[in-house]
Amino acid sequence: MIEMIHVSKAYEGNPKALFDITLKVEKGQFVYLFGPNGAGKSTLLKLLYAAERPTEGEVRVNGFDLVRLKARKIPSLRRTLGLVFQDLKLLQRRTAQENIAFALEALGAERGEILKKANQALRLVGLERKAQCLPSELSAGEQQRLAVARAIINDPVLLLADEPTGNLSLTASEETIRLFEKINLRGTTVVLATHNEGLVNLWPKEKIVLEQGKLSEGPLPLPVAHS
Amino acid sequence: MNGSFIRQACQNLTQNPWLNAITLGTIALSFLVLGLFLVIFLNTKGLLEEWGSRIRVTAYLSGTVDLNQAMRLGQKVRGLEEVLEVKYRSKEEALKILEEKMPERKEWLRGLPRNPLPASLEVRLKGEYQNSEGVQSLVKKLQGIPGIEDLQYGSDWLGKFSAFMALLKVLGLSLGGLLLLATIIVISNTIRLNIFARREEIEIMRSVGATGLFIRAPFYMEGVLQGLLGAVLALVMLYAFFLLFLARVYEPLKGLLGNFPVQFLSWEQMAAMGLGGVFLGLFGTQVSVGRYLRL
Image (cartoon, rainbow over all chains, first blue to last red; front, side):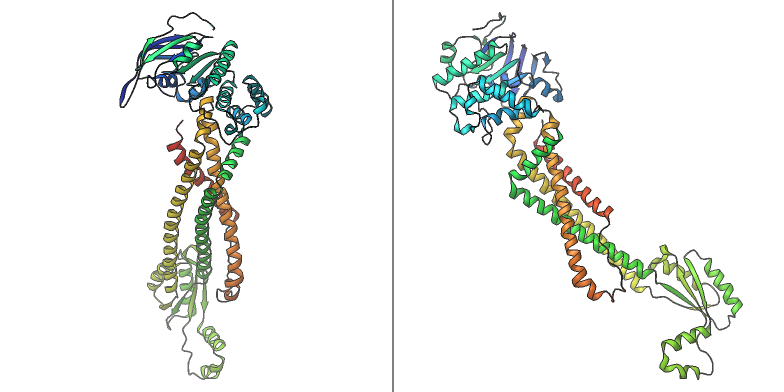
């Protein structure tokens, strides 16, 4: 599913954003990517969805060799992924249903299919009654669930989430984790980046620990396991 | 899929109505000025050609040339490459014409002891030589032919008019070039602002795996629509101005212009303007998409 071999990423001004990362995540796993702010979690996720290229090393995701992947092939990779961003990236002038539908429209899906799938996703995240609400009319937890619903609309095999509980209360965080578990149980591999130690301890899973761009603890080798 | 591109492009256009109205206005204004130059240029050229077709070179023959020699001269002149037609006018015909032109002096003219007017050859030029250069070239050749005493041709105005046309052309092209450049900048800027306004949507589209074509196409469509609409708007305004000109300026001055029929742009020229709009729209979009929408 995910394989990183001796991966390093350097930026101008930050020569060791990631340094010599080797890890493997198997199909069906639920893994925390854990570490303090600035540890390189977002950079690592960006490497996984080809928003960045590694300076060194090999990265393979869902069968795609991301070092050699041509730019025009990136959309094919992304269609196998679900992405939940830290800032959610919800369209504020569109309703919850339209936000989800937008992702399918962007993939050129049929109108009838778009509506059907959007409603299914809203049901899965428990927002079917808020379908016509704008994001600003939703609570922080609901907004987060909406972002998750949009990420899974295309039935991804791998879900990457960057700090999805960052701004949430404990209750909302639990709801979000339960939602990710539900998605994971459907067979989707989940990698969830977080700096929240409490969260990792409260709902323990496999974890990859990053500190100052280096791997300090990781699931290599790992059994395929569900919580 | 194409329908959705057009829908998206229309949404972009209506999302920021003021910005797009200003863009459309600028494109229309540029095309209007270009169109005005084109209409003025084409009509002036037409008028010049019309006047040029009336150009005659009159070669006055010396008194010693008899009818036979005049006929041979006529044949020789007809053989020149600039010449379309040569007409011999005898001394008697010349006097008759003068009498018709000056009826009050008819008796006086008839009372002259001998006819003072020379016989002449009236030379008409071929279409491509009906200009200042053509006349000059013919005159040079005629001047060297024995038996031709004097030449009359009124092509001075033609030279000045040709110079004016050249000036008009240069002015039109320079101004047109500047306006087209401004149009490209305005379109490109509008597209840039629309890319900025839709940056979140673009990010989402990228994240879910929308293709580059799918993301870029609405912007190109928007540029094309702006260019085309701007050109069409300009043509409508131009036609309105043209009708106004016909009613207020042309009709009163029709006689002065020798009843020369003023023409609007042809269908082909209008289509070319529309295509120009499409091209400018595409080019303006490419400038911004290339710089700000790297996928």
